[in-house]
Length: 329
Ligand code: C5P
Image (tube, rainbow, N blue to C red):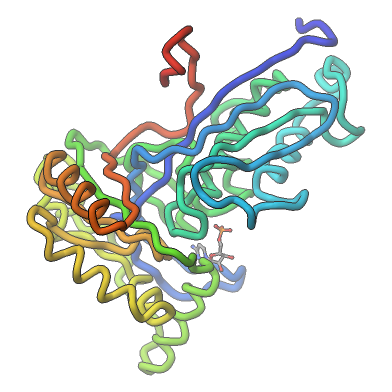
């Protein structure tokens, strides 16, 4: 049993994602669209440092501009409150600080995944917060319960907990893991201004209505995609990539299509995809070397990019190794 004033401190990291498939069906009555999605978690991580404190406080920091993230109702606050609601009276009494509703915790989010970039950065923050609060408050929630809470926070949050590759059906949150043996190499190119996810879905609906086509997208996950994930051939994977939101992202940001075209002309790029609802562009490269060369070429042109690989695991604790600056589990 814990002592009343025990101090706990954890570091958790959670990955951003790319949708290898994002087949979007009709708008449902709950405001979401039915999806068939295949997620791949990639090695660009959000990192959370959390410890016991007198009150709930959240700070966003890191190499990207986090000035737009403020207030007391971010996904991180909401994730912390959801875990707090799960604490029973006994567990709550063991904890110092906070209010009647939420025990104290200090959460610092070191952000690396582009904001409003279509890579699930906010979802990764929420997933990492669920794990961090569960540990700091010793809430002892099972993985299944954490996945339930994740689904309440957003359609992509369960995947950020689970990671690797997964099929996502319904809102994208009914997950089935996908067996894969290959590692794929990507260069991610964030854009200067973000796109709002609801706005991109709404634009797709508008485009479909204008074309007088009631959404009849095929919501199957192609067998060729699953087969490509079992191998390591980037060309085979490239042939199966599909994102229905791409047309909507191009419509809202007309220069994006030209930038995608330019990227696809680099040697060793198999395909360029808009990541999720965009506007981050994801260039699938034939090898790690090609990805590094593209990353270096973009740097020379003054274009920010990240060379990453996938799949990687979902939200995990990070253990500090003295003197090493920390290494992941
Ligand atoms: O669940 P999340 O908060 O990430 O979703 C943000 C928005 O994206 C939703 O409010 C909805 O407008 C849109 N969305 C959708 N269908 C999905 C997932 C998201 O229309 N399956």
